[in-house]
Image 1 (spheres, rainbow, N blue to C red):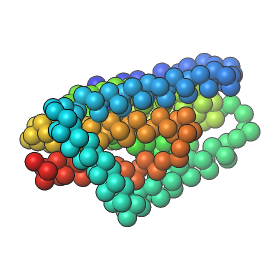
Image 2 (image 1 turned 90 degrees about the horizontal axis):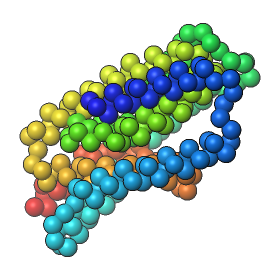
Image 3 (image 1 turned 45 degrees about the horizontal axis):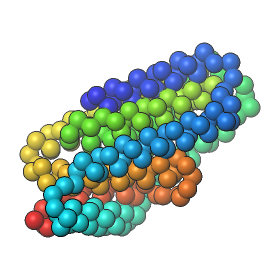
Length: 240
């Protein structure tokens, strides 16, 4: 639960900072933050993948093959379930609310739109689900810490449009990610280390892919890859 707590703290801190700011950060400052966040995401994602593979050359090659195959099959399953389509609908809902508020001036009340937009965008991100799984399996909280920074920056902007109700979005975030972490912790207690490593190695590459989106290098339908976290341990079990 450490990662979820850090994520919630980021949302609250960003909201409070946003309420106290007279004007948003400059464009160069935002670009610098984006670059730093991307670099941090690369380090966190590849670091976890590196820690999750090991052994001789043959063992490492097999583990990486499992990860790649899991991502391919997971994406196929995710597209069949139309996960990205569902995620896009949530994003469209949030954008419609923000567009309606655009040009209306700063909001300092407790408008329900702030809670709805924050809950929608902070809960559906793939980084949150992947990070919650990692936090539960092996207490790896850096992924959710990175998400906490991202959410803090977003909350700083949201409170300018919707007011302080954005802070209330921590409730569904904690409920969702905390539940995923607790379920992952329970599952991890009964899984062999080999299967846990397969999940974490795959999750690490998914976290790395987030950096490509942050830096706008490639458009990746990350939500479609989420089933790969379930496919990876199955492949690792079959390939033993």
